[in-house]
Image (cartoon, rainbow, N blue to C red; front, top):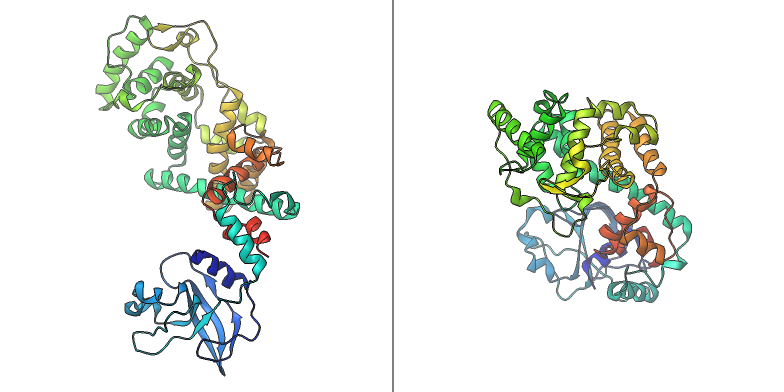
Length: 422
């Protein structure tokens, strides 16, 4: 058993609360269990309790065994001086404050309903794809749907933390922050870090000065990425290298090491060279892209903003000096949708939140409802359990549920887990 289970029992009062007494025999009544604290300090703040004839307001600390109070050195920590009740599974010894005064203790052993304890143990020891797999089909739809709605917002709030960080490092320059996060997501998981490092080393303002010349934009991006530091056979990369040599000196640039970029086990369409060429085409075609996104009214308008095709050289190449069968390299629909999910929606949501314009938060949610469901192993796993997502709104919530709750076994913080432990 984990201490978090006691937190759950106390927070939701899922134990036998009839005729409660402290371990030293005083009548106990819980008027309010307090506010759960998941940071440092006592586990619950501002509880209200009646112990004997006195109503106490203060904090509550929980442990599996009372002696853990001493093991954790709470007696020497002033943050615990205001603890008015020690809740434990077992009081193996009484504990006191620094003053020597004994702390009232409630022992929960023998007060936990057998069914709740049995289901908790099943969740704890389950080794299926999700801990509640054997219970899942019996969970009421309203519980699942309401929880998924909450998880979608939680996921967006989590993603907006990255937006807030980008804004902080760009002195609240929305276009520059958007450019950096967009670049990061162009790299997908494999090349996210070098793509972001590239954007940080090459400010949008510098690119904007050359945006009308695709050759110069490609030279800046490929040069900064470190891909123009060799001698080429083909005319186009040779011309880019020459152009970058001039621009590098003009803007005092230092290129990244090409060793940061990964090609292994990627499909050629996802090679970083192809993504850089596409990114260059987007920069060349778009001015004030974030402003245009704010003005876009629907999914089609947003998709049109990303309808770009790299220069002619890339029709027959995935890498420099390596000819391939002629093939268009425009941004694919699925890739654009990933950009909308991972970049546009979080930016719209955070923009609306920080500017107190709820319209943009609603637009972020509506965008996810318009987008088709994602196709990945997690979504397929939920489908195997009978949960078929209709749109990206639902797949994002399901991904969050699996990665942030199920995989971490946070069943006690999950509405589905709570419904099982009623």
